Image 1 (cartoon, one colour):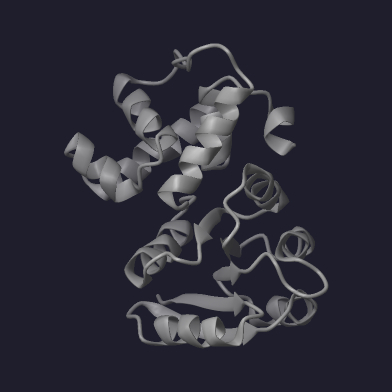
Image 2: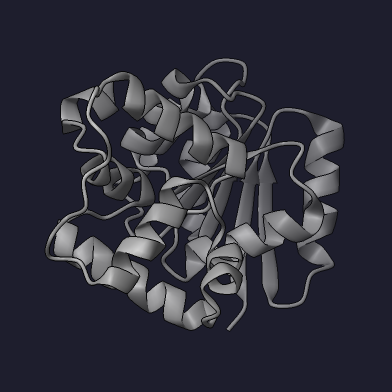
Length: 216
């Protein structure tokens, strides 16, 4: 089944580029593109995409608030922020609003399409330097070294450590000499054991950072 995708982006040239990328990619179905959050609020619940690529900085309502309003109506839809913002404040606000991924606009086509497949499969894709910034932000809140949850297996701890270092699922698979589906299985079990639902929450648990700190 093709992954259906909608785009919310105020920059016309970029809207065109992203639309072309989705239309020309195998395994994807392009549903629509919207120039601002207000239009998206009305259109997306009707389109029912599997994944939404959402800009943050738009005239009027920003993308983070748009996701916050749409997510309760569209629990089956995954939102991936596509933005120029790399600061922890925007990252954490986006993730706590309901976004499942956070990619930069300079992300190459192949990597972005891989991220869409990842989030559709239950992952939380992030540009590697974004994941690194999350880890650095967590570490600023803690003077202790990362703890190893004792209910995780040695392999699960290895996967979680690489996840916290910003590795993509494919990179984790290559580093540990296992398949990507096996990585997905380990990450699903890690989420279950740590009682979390996202990459950022898993990293927060791993570094023993309170949820309140993550939400700030």
